[in-house]
Amino acid sequence: MIRSRTPRRLTLAAPAALGALALTVLTVTPSAATSTPAQIATSKTNGVTYLKSLQAADGSYAGSGLSNEWAFSAFAAAGTAVVDVYPGGDTTKNARTVYRNLLGTAGWPSAAPVVTDYERGVLNAYAAGIDPARVSASRNLIAHVYSFWQTAEPGYFGPSANFNGTVFAALALGGAKTQAGGARVPQALTDALVARIRANQHNDGGWQYGKAEGNPTALAAASDIDMTGAGLAALCASGVPATDADVVQAKNFLKSKLVSGSGAFNSMYGVNTSSNGWAVAGLNACGINAQGTDFTTVAGKTPIDFLLANQYNPAGGFKYKPADTAPSAYASLDALRAVAVGGFTSAPPVPVTAGAPQWVAQSSFTAGTATKLALSVDDGAGNLKVCAVSVTPTGTTTTLGDVLTAATTAAAPAGCVTSVTPASGTGTVTAVNGKANSGSNTWKVSVDGSAFAGATRGKVITVGDTIALRWGA
Image (cartoon, rainbow, N blue to C red; front, side, top):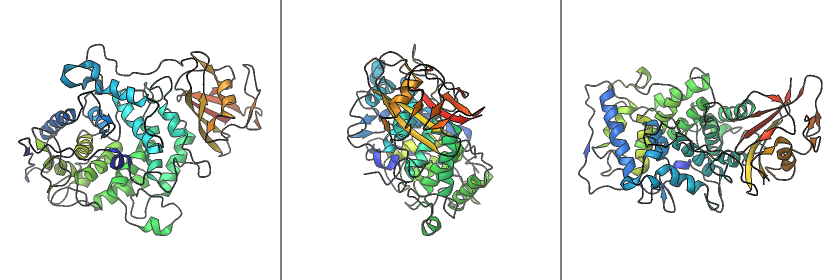
């Protein structure tokens, strides 16, 4: 059964209580129109300290009964490399290595995974400095996300009724760039996602976790602060500019929900740190200043003021609600990410641990080890197909021809490729799915966002490549 709430609300463990600590709450003085750079710097430093306290003795942040891997996107936003986080001085138990090992296990994420499991993995692996398409010889998280493409409703990932799966697909596929910082997926796929996100925007400018497209009653319903933050970030992660009318409408919805005396957003869950964190993360992703004029109340308060006012110092954890008496793990992850001007993921910082690279990734296929590759096929007439292709390479590389042949029988969803011509050899691909080359309109291929070039069966494909086929001039 698909989750009906966002990945954070459903996969994080119960809030951690640190009531035994002697804590004080950071006070933002009323005279300050916004939190100062010094206050924010202190908040980030102490927040990182708290997040480090959540690490288990084996170095993990995720696993059975423990699911705080959203810490990785918060660490990255705050400038701390996940590989630099390890318990008791034992670098072999650093959080990145432990998480990568977990992601590579056959039993992860569960016996009945849903799309948000893989999207969460993409966002946090990327922030940790793990190429999400190249976790291991057998694990390609980008391909797993592709496998949830809805053929009958192109642009949705996972059942469309659970719209949050599509929002987080945009966040994952748009936010997790290549190691060189480029777009990983083709523009046609990005455009399909953006179209669905726009179609689900409520009349008030925000979003909810459920599908609203085509339903006037749902579109007229009140939006959710959390999902509006995520929807805003999803648009901007997909390249939509902050000046876009739908982005401005979402920004204005959030602005209308500000509580003057505190800078909090009036969420359907009540005033709380996590909702503020998600809203600010959305603003951050769009380059909108959460302490700018639009988000400073008449009482001189901003959403950042509210977050800092609910942080315990020097221990660094954040309360979920102002009346709480102990910090919450998941609220702290959301809050620190926002205070550190992060979106829902961030590029990994350069580590300080000697010898630790910024990125880790599987470098080649392992012969005989089954894996998946992400494939999209654009026929140039608006019929985009997206799938994950199961392959078992016989060497350290494979070919485009072998991938396309495999896609005819081993793709999820099925039907991504029904035929390819020629059916063997290494020459030029002359037809896919019955559509043949015609003059200057030919089948071209892009790998990991590279420029499209003529598609040949012999083109070398290696582990984790995101493959896009396109027919056109």
